[in-house]
Length: 414
Ligand SMILES: Nc1ncnc2c1ncn2[C@@H]1O[C@H](COP(=O)(O)OP(=O)(O)O)[C@@H](O)[C@H]1O
Ligand SMILES: [Mg+2]
Image: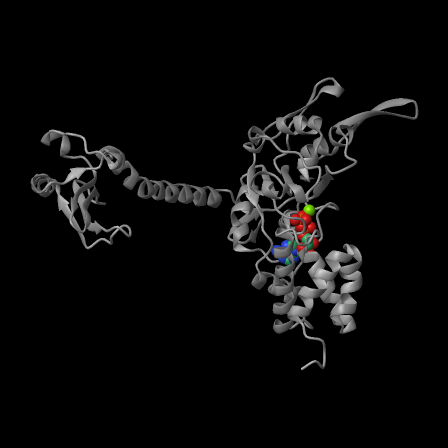
């Protein structure tokens, strides 16, 4: 808080906090650039022992006026606080950034719109706020779930798919990572291959291998070259469990037009079909690393690898969204009051999981299954047996039973 000695000329044009001690505290003027060129914003206040005072004067002046003020303040004993000095150029840049960015983004959006109009003939389907080009259809297109809810949060992800970006979805089990990709594919009729890295997948399954058949030696493509050649969408599930050799093969195709070199097959080059898309899902990567202890055995992914993806954190649906999904999935029998209570129970179970009071996650799938069964039996407790309790430890079952009781009073207990 030491005030440097400045000549008058140096002092002019310096932006920052000018202050002086008074009997009641520290009186200050803050000088910053205003949003019009060559104008300055002056704010005044007094700080007392109990903290920063509020702004009681707030005005915009021109350079001439500022010069006069600076002279006056100097006479009155104000000095600039060295820690707050900001050059006029950097302050102007700071203020100018957002309007400049907005101008550029608007131009980019307009250019994209124009491009789309030129590309006629390509069939598209509307998903969220985007027109997604359709694929060739075929047996690998996932089954469409008419009750699937596209949250507005998913728009950026869908746009990345259209733009052929590599998308990694991270989030708890059952948050909807796989189904988001599958439902985009189902609506736009693209075939999907899934490969789970947690367990049995070898680099041979993934990249390909030689085999002998009827005395002949044959090459069998793995899922990666198959998807690349046939223009399928490949979901690499639980990528944080993948072997290093699989990650190495993947790295080559992470660029939008990246080619795969099949070293085992005499360095044959596989170029990606224009419809090929690559996705990964993980539970405990990056922003989810804080939950690593809940997903035993997951590897840390290095940042250079992560930088080749757009990584989206996918949280569970909100209780309101989940109530909607219950209503849509179990229509016409499900009602709004029932759906709201069930969504609240799921939210409480997830909070208990995040606190580590519960060791099992509560997926939307589990909630839907439990709801369906209770509508058949009319008994939430009995339905919870096969849908929930039998799948978790006795301790978890007891805790979930408590949460359910908290939301649902037994029949006739008024
Ligand atoms: N937005 C949604 N709308 C409807 N159902 C959903 C939605 N998100 C998830 N689900 C349900 O939750 C289930 C589990 O989601 P899934 O994609 O398998 O999760 P994850 O891959 O994250 O483990 C899905 O099969 C689906 O029934
Ligand atoms: Mg999944």
